[in-house]
Amino acid sequence: MAIKERRARERAEREQLIVRAARELAETEGWDAVTTRRLAERIEYSQPVLYSHFAGKDAIVAAVAVEGCAELAVRLRAAATDLDDPRAAFAAVARAYLAFAAANPALYDAIFTMANPLPFGTPDAPAALHEAFAAIADPATASATAAGLDPAGYTELAWSALHGMATLARGGRLRPELDASRMAAFTAVF
Amino acid sequence: MAIKERRARERAEREQLIVRAARELAETEGWDAVTTRRLAERIEYSQPVLYSHFAGKDAIVAAVAVEGCAELAVRLRAAATDLDDPRAAFAAVARAYLAFAAANPALYDAIFTMANPLPFGTPDAPAALHEAFAAIADPATASATAAGLDPAGYTELAWSALHGMATLARGGRLRPELDASRMAAFTAVF
DNA sequence: CCGAAATCCTAGCAGCGCTAGACAACTGAC
DNA sequence: GTCAGTTGTCTAGCGCTGCTAGGATTTCGG
Image (cartoon, rainbow over all chains, first blue to last red; front, top):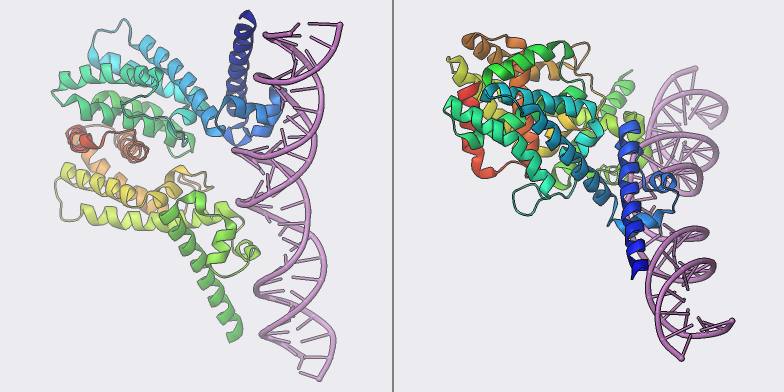
């Protein structure tokens, strides 16, 4: 019996190794550089081993995304603590969101822009996704009710604004010198 | 002399043919289906012909993007006419923007989300890009000054919100039943 | 009419995600 | 202690990708 347990443990460790390697490779060289061959070489196993853990490359990306989602949720929660004013709390969460996206571009892409098969709508999405969304939705809802607006649409709009800024900023589509002005507009408006 | 002109004309026509074929293929089957082989087959030439017109596949995507950008600009300008109230005009432009993105997803991707080598910052970007941005920036600026906010950051924020909504909506990340509520929040806030 | 130039295609390279089938190692029963 | 059976891993290869080198064919200018 103990042997099976050891094997299962080793499998789990190797699976974690794959996810970590994929993430590191993506973060340092971009997702284009994350090929199954390079990934296999990194973990010092042959290619087919990847497919005994994941259904395909997309599944590996999704695993990285879930991991990143959990981290994002933690950051957002941390940013909102000790702030009673709803608008101030939401602004802090917004700053944390953009900081996360700027610091972990590959991770952010895996979560939000890559064609991963993660179910996002509320049905059976991983808990980490719900947690991250709630970390945005909670302060957004508070801010919306303070402004007398319907929280649901308000929340999605605010999230869209954050997501838009995060993605457009990367491609050089937004002028960096306007970062402060943009953020000021955000806090003035949301 | 006239022969050279005819040849140049034929070349231009074929280039247009390539761009049109790429766009149609992307719109009907997605950009993943736009391979150089399929594209070549569609225009009834061999693969290398593509490379006598464009530096590579990215350049073809960029050409489609520029074309789409010009169309987007026209739509946005049309939406804003005959509306004097700045906020109403901006709301109309926003609706037109989202309608365009929803109606031409592949085109929208080519312009804004695919890794195309288009220079977006003001230096020497194609005129179509400037025109499209101005079609957003002009009403946004009017709306910002009406609200007493710095137009520059306000414009980029509003654009980010639109871009975020357009992209998140596609992946099923936004709930369609909140479309109206989201738009109401937009007009209330911007 | 003939050399020169432009045009186009066949064939191929290296790399991609993914998989079939062979091989080795380890497990558990006798 | 030995042998069947399971499990794990690897080598080799398929069909596809973007892209390019080289040669054949057509067309042009004198």
